[in-house]
Image (cartoon, rainbow, N blue to C red; front, side, top):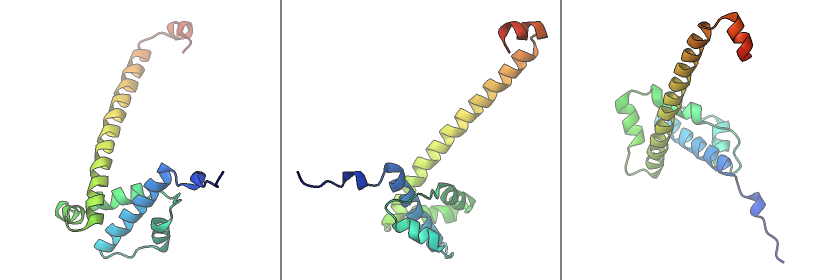
Length: 128
């Protein structure tokens, strides 16, 4: 039976982390900013553990609309196309997260209002 090294394959999280590191490095370069050595190392590491999602999202979010579009939608650059795909997926997930958090906040507000209407005896009976 031949040797098998399947267990050495990077996880999906490690691949995602490497991708975000590569995209973050790309954005920094396009903007003419210095790329920290740790970002360069992470971008080349197949087993990347650092997650650059917040830095990448924050950098893109802070850009003026036209500048962000220029970075995201350069059709002749494969990294820019990958960045655009990443951004659109990330943006959708962010919107869904904000909606979910707003629903949770509203539900908690309603819960607190309902509990405030109960007497101490009613709370005790309900185990609250």
